[in-house]
Image (tube, rainbow, N blue to C red; front, side, top):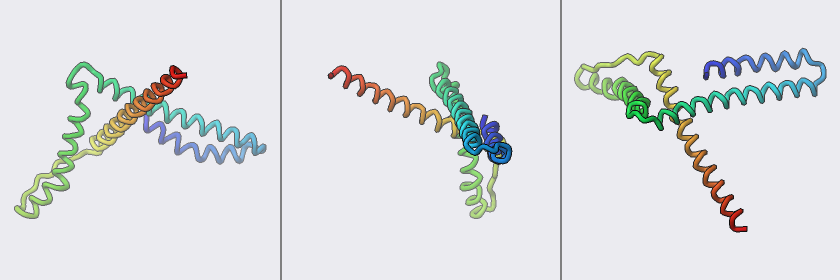
Length: 145
């Protein structure tokens, strides 16, 4: 989904230029560009919502593994990064040995996706909590009137 957002973001600039060149009425061109921007924002929002739903579904799952696979994977990746950039260089400097583990680009990308999903999930939880709190306060105000 992020790839689609990146492609659309890359294409949007040239499309805006084409609209400026092809549409003589500047008001119409501005309306078209505003509509395009709106659609791009909606697409990005939909992608973020989809990611958030996946993470929330996993976090609320019945299986221990379903709830914890992301944190476990992130822990393994952090251990590899810590080894490669902290432990192995010091061992190499002090004792002449230091085992570095490969961290393929796909694994790095998976880590960034996992962290992004975690952030989206936590943000979603906080937003829901805030909205529930506001709704509760509004209900209290209405009941008090």
